[in-house]
Amino acid sequence: MSLSVVSVVGARPNFMKLAPVARALAARGARHAIVHTGQHYDPEMSEAFFRDLRLPRADHALEVGSGSHARQTAAIMERFEPLCETLAPDVVLVYGDVNSTVAAALVAAKLGVTVGHVEAGLRSRDRTMPEELNRLVTDHLADLLFAPSPDAVENLRGEGVAGPHVHFVGNVMIDSLVEALPAARALEAPRRHGVEKGRYTVVTLHRPANVDDPATLCELLGALAHVGKDGPMLFPVHPRTRARIQTLGASAAAMNGVRILEPLPYLEMLGLVSDAGLVITDSGGLQEETSWLGVPCVTVRPNTERPITCVVGTNRLVAPRRDAIRDAAREAVAQRPATPPLIERWDGHTGERIAAVLCDGARFD
Ligand code: UD1
View 1 (cartoon, rainbow, N blue to C red):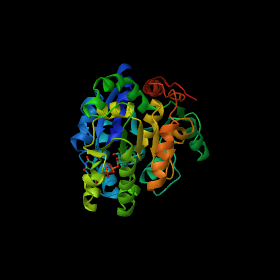
View 2 (cartoon, helix red, strand yellow):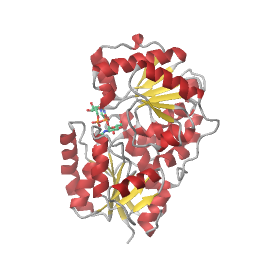
View 3 (cartoon, rainbow, N blue to C red):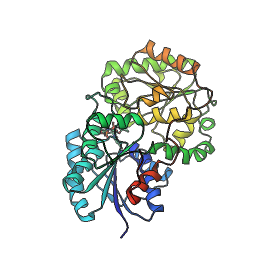
């Protein structure tokens, strides 16, 4: 009997991590069911990604929707537990650091099912971030830990999570990027948005620490308007951020040079990011994508769970202050590398390594 795997995903950044694993498992003839928790449900936050990533429809939808952390996590657990018992897989795979990740890991671990964590070992050491708590708990429940970088392996070792079940497989999200880049570029997103390649900024902001406090959000919008004077700025807005901007009463008109857009599908976003002069963000994934692409990135956060993007990549951290962001933006653009940095095992083959561990018992130290 071939290996039976269940992948549980729910939020936007999970989907690009799932796609390469799904393809690699299919190539090896493993049985693989996809469970979508419904944490993200707007078409542009979910369906558009399944389409762009050529993912099949999820086999099971838990449809939990939004809610407080406890409510959402509990709803996923309640609905996933009976499904997991029925499916009785050999392995449950969870991805990244969202509420769906920790909820599914907890259910599977308590049912005695092997848990594999894709993107294990990242640490910001900032426990005010919900994602950090999700990472810590998930890694300590997981039986197989798939680390994207050597610092992640070190973090696990430091917490006593070491040994043959930790695999340095590389960054699975980069597999999706490598695969999708030609199609993304073919869309000619900059031309369709009326901006010139290399001369515009892409912005994303959605972290609670940045958008939930009106004073911080106001300062950030001011900073964007300021940097926006240097060139056009495209800002696809997460539903959470849109609601906060509306509450503030800040109008797009007040943010000269900043174009507010709906959340963008994967290929269009990748097309825009790959030709951007600068990215300003608080996303985890964009720090990695810009590093691989060699696009300067300014991350509005006091810390990052992805330090390799600052040490080897093109990322720099900045406080949520107008002058700091403007200075960091100018410096980042001036110091753009001539060629994209090379990061070990961010090579488009991570999904295959994960499948090799699962199906053949391979090791990646
Ligand atoms: C979640 C992840 C975060 C990730 C982000 C990517 C957690 C703790 N956070 O944050 O790590 O970077 O996804 O987007 O899991 N909403 C909609 N439509 C949707 C989804 C959400 O309108 O399809 C709105 C709802 O008002 C919801 C809010 O956004 O309450 C927040 O959604 P939620 O999934 O709780 O967290 P994110 O901020 O998206």
